[in-house]
Image (cartoon, rainbow, N blue to C red; front, top):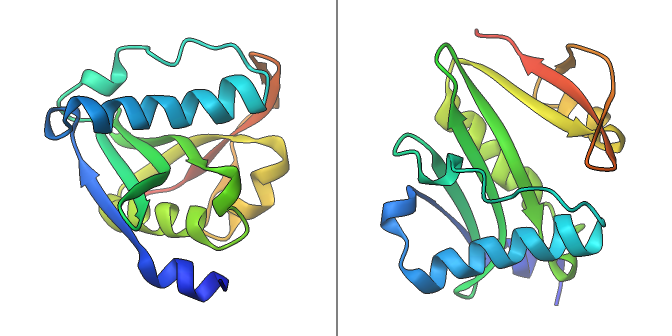
Length: 152
């Protein structure tokens, strides 16, 4: 199967937590746990309460009905914050993470957007106009760099 085949079958849904049934919520949290906690060895408090905020939007990337990626878009007053960007190991290197960020940026429109990029992904986020906005920091054993895409 080629990357184009997978990309063509991938869909992105934008939902609030109240739009998800219990199985979809479980799949979302399981995917984040598998990648961030298990694969990356970063024991962090994923269930931070922000998923439940009615203004939080979850972008769910599905291939053939299976959740393979997600992104969380948070309202932070004057700006939006992208976080929890993840694609399952079996679906990486196919442009799917970029598809999630493209969708988030379309939702953001002209608003300022901030994120904390894993250090190795700083150049990747630059293609959406993000620039470093502070020093690197260690978050639960993983080095990050704050970045911002100014309002347009």
